[in-house]
Length: 154
Image (cartoon, rainbow, N blue to C red):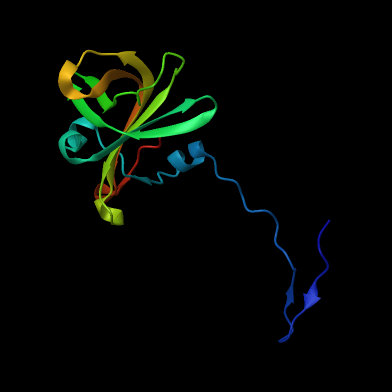
């Protein structure tokens, strides 16, 4: 069914609405050779954040979210985390999210995001910190200063 034509000033006949726009699928975009944008970078290019960025770890305890400031070391492809004693995830915590970032303005924003499971790790006994490892299930790194056009679709 089509909408009735409306006589507009100037004499043109127009419909008050147009049919639904054509849906373009991802395959059609690839076939048309269209590109996208990305800000993703490899972990190696964000490694300097381990010494200079802000870091926090988040997890759920008793149904409530908990976020703690953290220190992070990346040693032998392992994410070793230190938090204040008593602030570490307990034995019932099965998933944690670790974020290390820096920057305040849009194109200065860079980060590493790690999702994974906590595992005990040794640390200096006299540090006053609790140490554990985050065994990653997903690692994502981005840098808005490196926003670029790409033909990759993620």
